Image 1 (tube, rainbow, N blue to C red):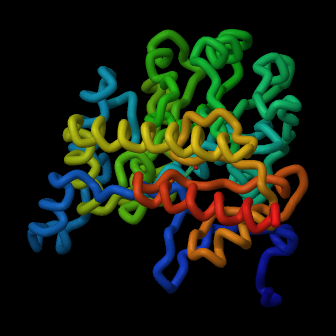
Image 2 (cartoon, helix red, strand yellow; image 1 turned 180 degrees about the horizontal axis):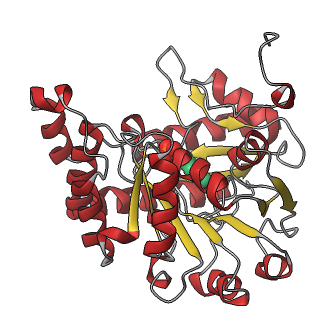
Length: 348
Ligand SMILES: *Cc1c(COP(=O)(O)O)cnc(C)c1O
């Protein structure tokens, strides 16, 4: 750290992104989608016209918002676009995070945001079975932030459980991070007309195969969206580049491709879980495009030796577990095969 850095940030521990390996591996460590983006998006990337580069992008990202509103049956003024949902989370911490609580085991970025914005935060432990108990949040004070499905467990809450938290105190903001909602969970967006203290954040990084284009968005009451827009216009009004706006619109409108690829991933997940369970492995019930497998550092290292990259956190209570993203059917067959070999080596 240079001597110019603000003192209060001296002990900031930044977020550690998953590794992007330089050699060819079966890459199951950052929950990217194994399938390409919609062909409609590929067409846009191939045919970008020069003006899209020369002119400033639309600060309202209207085309993308209209597509999202159409998909979810809401009004465009109930949505806002972000340069990745991480940016949306950051702006939510700025706007609503004065005093905030989130699960102790969850997306590790939450703690980083709380610290970089000097927020008062508390972390609520999960139950023994790694589930979230809504009553813990009903009892808490301040803003609630929950990833649903949660990461890295993959376990989802039903919208009516989240609704209990939202309804318990209408003066408390509840933020639901639905990064993985399209893989079998049920979205809370249906509740935003009923409650004006609910903010739902989603991303196109996972279920729409656009992690590299950085597209996130939020849906809420128009008042909350206006608050977030005030922050956005005070920070980076052109947060969405022209290409991402066009790609977001195209991806959102290609519902058939989205449905097909999401279903393939869910089917592949169920195959993987059932095959690994046959080998005696303990796996949490996942509604995400990853599974959390009891295996520990050994399993992670042995997979890596076999050219399969998973995600491992060397910190209690996660250190007994390995997170494995769902790849293509063929990749997951390879994973099952490698796991079989590893358990045979162990038995010997
Ligand atoms: C991946 C992820 C995000 C970030 O998504 P981006 O849109 O790529 O920034 C946010 N929350 C959770 C829980 C995630 O897993």
